[in-house]
Length: 112
Image: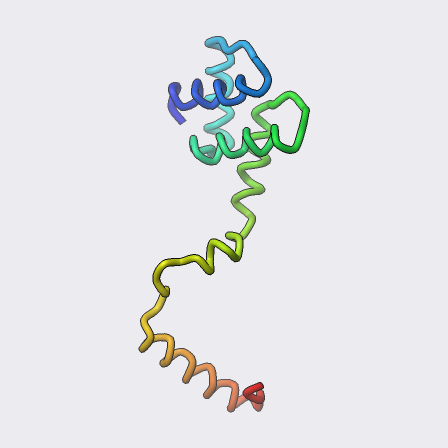
């Protein structure tokens, strides 16, 4: 994340905790962002999540922990089911389902 993104992130946190932002803080948070491999979007989401769930003073480790936790979670089913277009064409789905049925028949797995 660049300096402007870090400043914006700290301003998001400041909106919750009224922290005083200075140059050293920006520099240290930028270094933590690099180590934690944050993006501006994932870091901002982590700040909002932190303050939605905790009254603890936000530190860079909280952001890194939340960014990593969010990356491990699969997408919610509602997001997956809301996809506008199918991932595969109808022909591809039919072909794959034929292959699954053939494999199931070979393994003696009943249809239902």
